[in-house]
Every structure is written in structure tokens, then in C-alpha cells.
Length: 383
Image 1 (tube, rainbow, N blue to C red):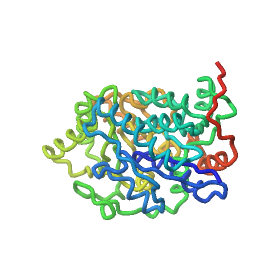
Image 2 (image 1 turned 45 degrees about the vertical axis):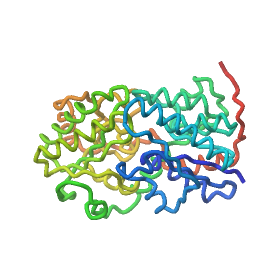
Image 3 (image 1 turned 30 degrees about the vertical axis):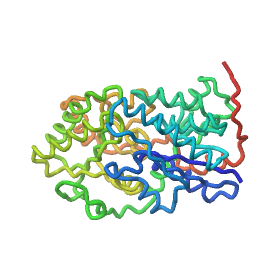
């Protein structure tokens, strides 16, 4: 039986990989090992570890690897600390393969530690193009990885053009779309996010319509995070439409976004905005399905919202170059651009379902491949 170790380091990582965990756990030829660390353990980011345990996944190890400060220096130090701590954990658990997810600094720490221990690295969501340092990290992990699970054919082709053996590249779809498909198939009876999660701000009636905002810092522009979030805050204030707003992730510049939100909340009357740290992946998707629009720069706008047909306003350069469906309007950071894009989407309504990032069966495909594919740390050079 093959031991497959999955490393989850942030709340989005869990949503991206949950169905893979489920399928590995129930697969007769696989044994799931789970490591949870970084911001997934930190209270102010809505600790994902609580949700993970509630879903029945008990970590084999936890790793504290976030150096406080939310700037470029602490991000680099957190990466190094992650390599050190994960190397020890991998040496103890002795997995046959390690799954590294997407493009965060914790992802490259995972890939480096496993690679130097001669453990097979499987990379999920490789081959995609994005803005900031994320693309560099993603492609670096691709070169460290031995097995590649691409979300679509375009991404798979990019991985092969980078010199990876086509026999190791599999177009599986994105596991995050699996959850979106599952929730979409449910009877949409609605739920009360205020009652279930609390949050901060005035309550409103979601049945009358609302939008969702999720804006993270851009690492290559982290010094501009405060001014960027202020532009979005003013746009949402002027719009005056009921809004669920989610806290930023742990990347460099998140402190500026957090300060901007707190100051704006204290100095403006915004009864139509309610703030949350975190929801379970399924509850977030239930909220997203009912939204008139999602605003910000999260990949959720590109992936899950595209599948669900939810209009999306993508702000700035964080998702530059990523393959996208017709549901996305790209804007700059200015209040006027953001406001006009939202108003356009409110007028246009929903979009058809796009399967650009999968059809809802990625988790099962990935587990089946992991059970049969040759596990080797050797790489065939195709340059």
C-alpha cells in the first residue's frame, strides 16, 4: 500500500485538495498521511485545521512555519523554516509520495524538502500562468515534481513545453471544482452565515441579493496593498449593495489590507458590509452560488466561479495570464473601474457553466493515478 502525504498550509489549499483527501482515504491501494501547517493553524486567518478535523481528517503532524510580519523578508524566512521542519516530518513519516499544491511559498518548501529526501513529488495545478511571484514558484515546483496533475489541457501542454516527460503529465481537472460540482448538485435551501459564523458588521437579508469580496495582497506590489484595498472599499461603499467580505491571506502585504479594512470600518458607515475570516469550503461555495458577483483577485473567481457561472470582477495583476472563462471582467485598481465592472455584471446576470478547470471528478482521477503510476525520483530530460 502506497503512503501518500498531503501538505495543507492555508485555507484555500484545503478547498483545492479536499476531494483528493477523500479519495485517497477510501482507496484500497493508498494510505493517507496528512500534514497541516502555516496559516492553516493561525486563528486570525480562520484556522483551517478546525474545519479539517471536523471533516474527519486527523493530521499526522502539524508544522508551525510562519514568521510574523507579512512582508517579503518574513515570507522568505517562512519558506526556509518550512523546508527545515518539513524535512524532519517527512523523514519520520517516510511517505512514498508527497503532494504539493499550487504556487504558495509553503508549496515550494514542501517540494524542496521532499526532493532532497528522494521522495516522489506530485504537483497539483502546475502549468498555469499567474501574476506576481506565484508563477515563479509554480514553475519551480513543476521542475522539482515527478508527477503532474494539470487542471486543463492548456496547463498540461505548458508543463510538457517546460521539458517534463509527457508520461508523467495528467490532465485531471482541478479538485476545487469537484466541491463546486457537489454543492451545485445539492438542493439550494440556503443557510444563515450570520448565525453559523458570526463575523463582524451589520446583518442584512441575503435573499434580496448580495456580492462577495475577497482581495489578497499582490506580493510584487505589497507596499501598495493599503492604497489598493482602499480603492475597493470606496467602490463597495459607493455601490451600497449588500456584501460579504472575506479577510485576506497571509502573503506579504496582508497587514496593509487588514489595517485598511479595520480603519475604514471604524471611520465609515457601512451597514451593508459584513466581514468573515473563514467558512468551510462547502459553505463558502453555497454563499458564492447565491452571489450576484464576486469581486477581488482570488483564483476562486477564475476557477469555481467560472464553473458555477457566477460573474466575477478580477482586480489588478494577481491573476494575470491565467486561463479564464467569459464570467470574468478584468479591471485596474481604481474605484471607478471596479464600480463600473460590478454594475455591468449586476446588469448582465449569470453566465453558462464553464468546464475550463474540470468536470467535478479530479479527486478520483488523481487517487487512481497515484495508486498505479510509477513512483520515481528520476526525471527524463527532454530539452
